[in-house]
Image (cartoon, rainbow, N blue to C red; front, side):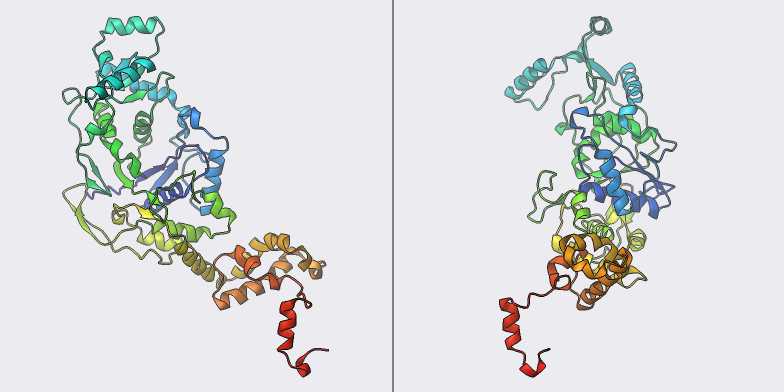
Amino acid sequence: MSPLHLSAPLLRFAPSPTGPLHLGGLRMALYNFLFARRHGGKWIMRVEDTDATRYVPGSVEGIRHALNWAGLEYDYGPGKDGPHAPYFQSERLDLYRSYATKLLDSGHAYRCFCSMDQLTETREKLARSGSNASYDKRCLHLTDEEVARKLRAGEKSIVRLNVSDSNLPQRPRGADLVFGPLKDAHASLATDPILLKSDLFPTYHLASVVDDHEMSITHVLRGEEWLPSLPLHLDLYAALKLEPPKFAHMPILLNPDRTKMSKRNGDVQVVDYIRRGWEPAAVLNWLALAGWGVRHNADTVSEEPATRSDAPDSTTILTMQQLLEQFDLLSITQRSTSLDPAKLEYINKHHLSQLSSTPGGLASMAERVHGQIKEAFPTSYSRYKQTSVVQESLNEADFFFFFFSQGRLTNITDIPLHAPYLFQEPNLSSDEANAMLKKVKPQQRST
């Protein structure tokens, strides 16, 4: 079978409600959308909200608004119930606890009763001794009677995965659709990672594995930052005797100066691009080509060689239909990619040009920018007092046609900036007007 395992794929986009959707999240949603649609599958939006300390009210609504603006409609998720509900992890806590109990009963997990102070002291002691371990496994050796006594006494506990070569079933070979075969990275993981916290909320590791299995996810597309956790997740699948999905980790997006994009720095929020009037088709075009690789033959996940297709240039103008026809997950590069704002300007300009040539395109754009122009130049509409907003917009469409014919417009919101003279009465007494008047012959001047 092909390493992509393309029989009716089901994917999931799983944002955390910690703020507005950022460009990296929109790109991840786009890749899930493109892969699912290209191969006749579906995709789910699942909200990973188990960390209440980071929850930002209104985040889910903001994420949905950004996806709707971009035209990325998920098949199941908040507002679109389906066979995999509920779609908020905070509503699935009993499920995670039942899986934690399975791991405890099989001996693949154990309860740890150490306090935060004890854990800190242990970690510091191990570090001073030169050990790479982060925990000394002391609670692993508690007897069943000692565990039961502590629970009866009301002592709080966490659940840890019992990671040892002798305890876990044979681990599947770590591999990724983008990065290929992976080296064993268990040494970089925390010692016996936590699965269930003392408040009975799961960590990402347990929740994501349980949900991906319960929702029958076939392909997991997520950020490169989760690549080091893949060995742990494969351990969980092995311990639970579950078949893991195919994984594809996407290299992160960088600022033009090659620094990591952050919600705290720079224009990374999708809402900023909405406010500034960028075309959603252009933003998706820009993001899709960021990291879309070149032709390369590689043995990725199976013994079958995966032939990577030729990828378009990073400024190729592509419609959504063309993206769907050409998108190839196996052509994603392994390198982090910087987002160049100049490329967005170029792409946006051409998408506007395409839109302007469609029936009603100019009038549609004029209506979108109508309010902004009217706010910037309120007095310029005195001559339109007896006309409708649509008629005003049609008059504005004439201005758009002028700009497109000159090839000058990169963003429809630039009209007031580049051409205020189209909406203001000229000041004939200004120095500039007088200088221009001197260049006109008297016989050419209007009386």
